[in-house]
Image (cartoon, rainbow, N blue to C red; front, top):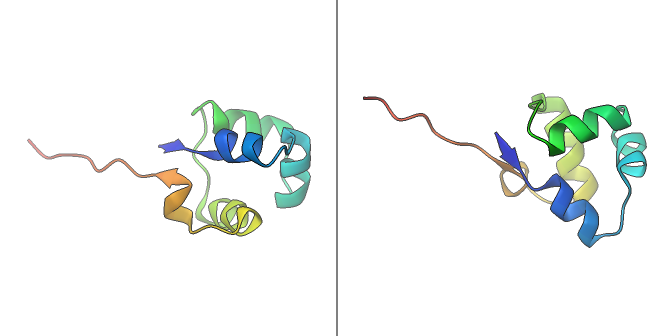
Length: 68
């Protein structure tokens, strides 16, 4: 799942450490999210969306799997 966390964070001049503290996770979790190595739980996605004041779907890009 792709996301816009890094883009939003940089636009608002927020460090990874500041975002991590605000949503109660480690900086490593934020790094993993930004690099696509970790998918946020629904609870974490909600916290991040609330932090930025945006709906979850405008931060996290859900890619629908196509059936063949």
